[in-house]
Image 1: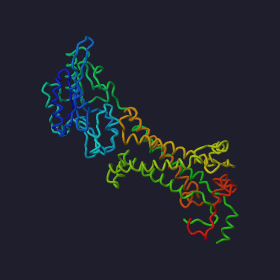
Image 2: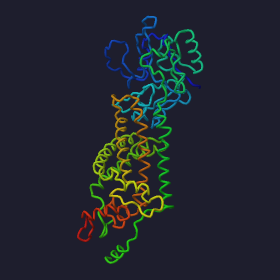
Image 3: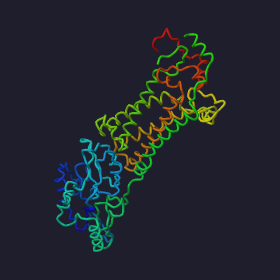
Image 4: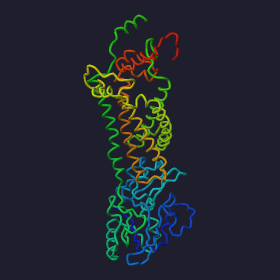
Length: 267
Length: 222
């Protein structure tokens, strides 16, 4: 099997939220108590038991037209995933065949390192279970050649699941057809995501979207430089101490003739 | 090891208690932290029931470490936290006589500049570990995510410094400076050792009459 991606085309999305429900159903996630906040967007953000949401946004175009902007938010399944880099337990892992990022909850120790590292702020921690939750692209389905539950549920074709090359071609065609500011989102950063958007208005006008996501510099400094340095520095000191012992010798008290005599005398 | 008559008291029981509380909690934090940071060292978690055990032990040992660090700073900052010039500078220029042949090493007080550097490193980087670790553990919502992200490399930076410095401390507390170890076990050191390592302190104690010499015989336990 080759690399697969999920493509979301907001110009085809009617925000029916069938995908949001299908996600809950397949992953057996309980619904939380919702609240009227004057928007259809509910819950307001991703949660430990909500792996994806549809964003609702009133958008006034430069021409003065008011329109809906919808956006499906979920794990982007980075090729260079900061969460996998920082995960100490191997709970977060790449699906070697498909390129998606899975989460083995049995292994998760709830350290929350991924929560801080993710450039999209996707993983959510649940203090009741002391574990982290996020979309795993329905790993149990896709490894059995089924499409993710959200894609399966989508009635308009806004969500598609397929081989990366084919999906990118499809996305490019769609962008061309939409014209204007339409653009692909996801192919230009973190090594390319395995969940991409076709955004009819271009990324700049979407609320709460990460405009220039990348593996945080703090993660690179931490894992690539400081982590190996910790052992190198300690090893250097141990080696240096041994050399000091051999070459220079320890700092011994000077022999005290008086003391010797006294000690001898008392014995 | 039992002290011999004529030995001099270098540390109090309280000093040794705080030292070992800090040392043991620090080493346990290093052990559990290493077990989590390096995949190849994950096996260190076996005796704690796996990686999750490492996390739990790490987090709660941190509380003991924090208490010990506060006690240590409160106890030592006056004596070991402030450099005294010019003699400390003279000592540093000669590297305390540790690295090359020096005819006469500047006489410094109870703590030499090397020990002061170690104390300040532990105090400052220990505080860094406590602060960054607190935010890593609890991830309070008021902290912006950009700030939270930097807690992690700072925590590892603290580990790099403390872990490396620990081995210097270990070496100079044992084979690198014979006679030093008893200062942290039973608290009694020889006069010859004091004369070599802390001549000015010995003179101060003699001058002030605070020198406690082990008599033996009349005291079974000290």
